Image (cartoon, rainbow over all chains, first blue to last red; front, side, top):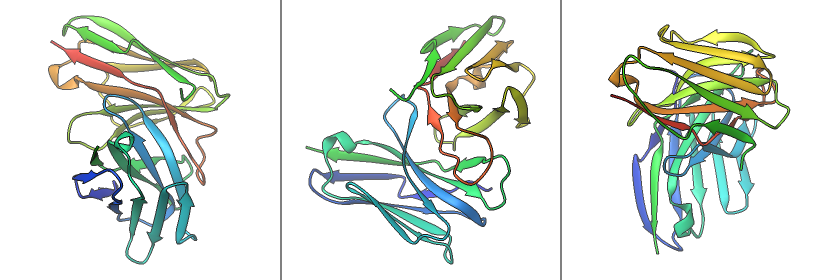
Length: 113
Length: 115
């Protein structure tokens, strides 16, 4: 399968704590993206990291990419109850002409007030 | 709002019905996608349209029939569905379907239940 795999499947933390989610994949990639999905809604793009980048920040989000291990992590700092959602990684294969994205099953994050 | 609108939000249909899902994007994008999201499964890409031409059909059963009349609208026509087709159907768009920086914008989805 070319899909990414997120780990853990579910994560439950208190407000103010940091949340770390991991993604592993199997192919060579152009980029890796993280998306967020609130229950029963569509996915929202959070951040894209290119294969030649190792770390990227956006607000409270920090993404790392290790192409030698074919893995990525998403860190949400100082989490809030509103961060409760499912988080998906998606990869775009190197040399892709269609820009097809391969999504994982996601990590369900619950942040308790 | 992401600029991608899907209707209806919820749909219940019998196995012999014919219905259509509609997607409209207001972002000026050239590529549109249909995905199926079932519980505990990765998002499944069904169809890709680039500049109104279908460029990928991911082994989807013929009971699902897409239509892209222009770059802003995408339909998914449904007929003779099975209960296992019950899922959240998501539409997405992106500036182009070419690789390199393909960020996709999703609609809120249509929750389909087949009885």
